[in-house]
Length: 422
Image (cartoon, rainbow, N blue to C red; front, side, top):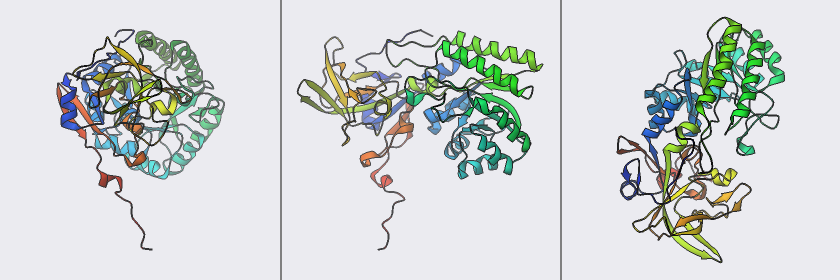
């Protein structure tokens, strides 16, 4: 795998399929996924014993089916995600189990699904142990530990430390072991995830915290999970993490635990963004080009109703122009926005809502703009804001595009709503 990446400013195809043909066949805005890139990223992670896909990143049934066929298992964070996993062919049985429920609470629907389908639980709150133990005593559980520190490219993606709601506070581990013992729950594994974009320095701290916690729990531990957060480059200045070193740090931790416990300890990793991000593209049409003072705006038929990451935490997405005349040698500063009645509907913004511009080729109304690295937390966070239908989703496999989610219709927007008989 290269350490860095470059992004084109002019693009004519996605995964070998002409962009103009994709737009003609499926319309815009449309998410397009490259199955080969998903396969490539799964292969990167083969040294780990178990690859558990965090489906919240991109949970389309076709994507779940694809990773299942690649030997990947899944993490679910809601009743809906358990349902999706089951519909995609996963089961909770097996070693490792095909589905694990990881969350900080049980809502009633999730607890019912966990019980009905015997889904193993990775508990992120002490109360989850009581709630599970009261209805299903004797099961094995894993514990998600907050080690007291975190990391993330934005505070909103930091999942560790005292400002994070995630996980069991490390100083409450004894209390949780007592709760588990009271209900006959066996603690068979630990999970630790401190946030997105984890670097090797922070990873070393996580490994040390995991080792301390596992030794405190003792020989019942048979699985440790490295969590997710593997970075992918969204910008040419960013680089991939050294996966060999990443694995070696975790493997060394696992081996020391095996020596202490006298039995095998399985090593899981739980990627979401790493598997899905680079595989996804949001294809949109340029519907207006406006001059506002010194700023040139390209306005698309896709807004933050389709891709919310920029407005949520100033996320950067590479962009390219699909045009029959675009020249990547002649660039101009452009602000890229969407159609929504909302001033924050800008794709070229930094955290805090500061609008910025991007050097892009000159384009015309009717050309296409591709928002790249959009497979993770793209469609999964899409909404109907401004009563906009959700976009279509297309999966390209071996050069053939397949519609894997139809575009939402206007009737779909009001399905389930009703006016009372006044």
